Length: 292
Image (cartoon, rainbow, N blue to C red; front, side, top):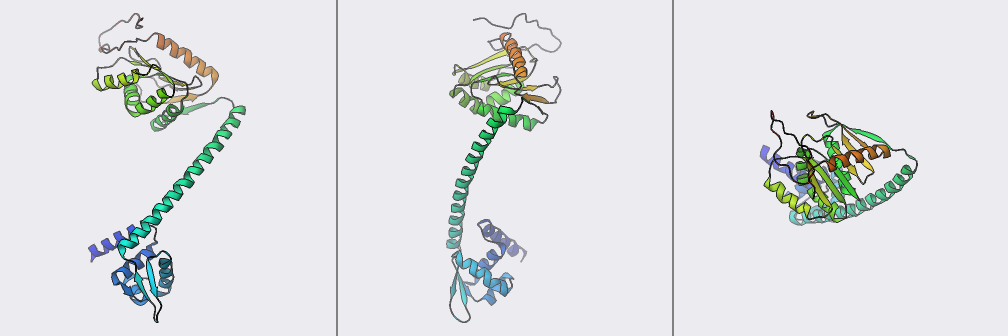
């Protein structure tokens, strides 16, 4: 009995998922098991009061799931289950398609309105500083900026995050950025040899707008500069796990960040540094830059 009840509940949930109410699903399943029946029999099996069942049967008729025979007393016949589910699926598909169209319209209208609002705000609003102190939010913010950057992206970051972002999580995003003409300059730390990274790097280097340079770790400051207009800068002290960052479009702050990046870029090596100094041993690098 318990297994039968579970199976019935599962059937009810399927029908509810296809658009019926719980009472409609119970009535339809009961009538399907009976084939042709009067409301009294359906009420007994479905445990739905007869006064409610007349209304439910009328709604199932409108959905082409039940046929009513005009006689005294009236009898009802269920549309075969396979055909009934097909009807419900078709209706659900049409609803989804219509919903998708309406959703796209809403999103497009919202984006247009948001763009106009942004233009109005930018005319009067001063530059701002935002603090980002949560890893997922930082990743989301960087991902959004990576997808919309228009002209240039300058990044100085540690090898751990470079490997995760540049060669895995955002690789396709950066490929698309390069194709639409974005210049990408990336400074990272010396790192171990890696066959996968070598292959991915060859793909990126095919684009003349991409260049990567290397710095003896640790990297001085983690920075990403978008279109020379906005900066996301990590202000955590290495090796702290804190990811607190500042995001700003303040013109003076951006200028300082650009000057800093140029210094790091010019002092970095164009050739991979694959043998970083080991702990306990000092390695003096007089000038890591490699001239052409």
